[in-house]
Image (cartoon, one colour):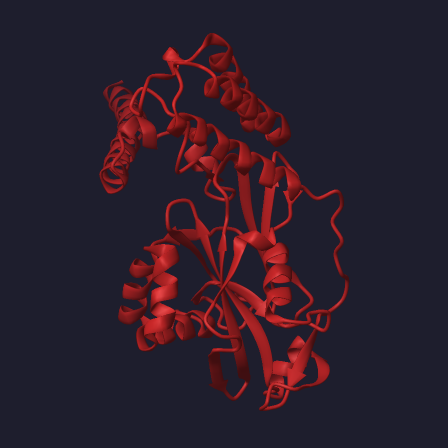
Length: 345
């Protein structure tokens, strides 16, 4: 009997102790994360944060004036308050055109109201323009392309010679062009990820981008196509195009050069600035080394450009060729440094 009681005591202790230990560790991690981002544990410990690891939602860096800005929203006319509540609900559902219309109506009413002022009206117009811009980029249909992409091959003077498969280009060391993409998410953060085992530079950190294909006529064509292929933006499941207005070239074309025997590449750098919106979801895909298999990137991170530069200087071998060329040129070329800093500092 004593043995049975002892066994029961051990089982009960384990049943109570393990969950308590797990809970304690969870609270410790939450506290550390809260200190890191300057938030409370309650703000950190939300299901949205866990679900968003794969498809993060981007919040607004700026929002309509509230109690901490100018006047409290409660001082707005009741009609404006109702329109703002409806607009926020439309945004949460991804109904960007309806949200834009309500922000426009609220701004018009506030313009003629004694309770409104110019900064408040402009804040509402900013929200209207963001929603309208996203609405204009909703895809009616997605036009994909089956089969391996054909890459353009160039001579030393950047004159087009012929096309070849991605595999052939790398195996034979053929000179080709590409676009490198620094994607800005939220407040000055740049997106990066670890390359998959099926890719060249497997396991290394990298930014987005890709080769100049047979259908591309200029570096902007490559940047636009690669951004739309690799960045899957959606509003409640509806795909979005990457607008040209979000893409900005840094430096001269073909400025970022790789001389590796099997990666003779001249790249053009672009910054892609994604709009902030509460219903906007982001997912990544990329090509395998053969140029045929499409790989899903299960997780990506964002960090300041300066933080990534520091990591590169400490662990150079852990970064892929494209990222390495960006950091080296940034360090050596004051004009490139100035242009990148303008977007990320």
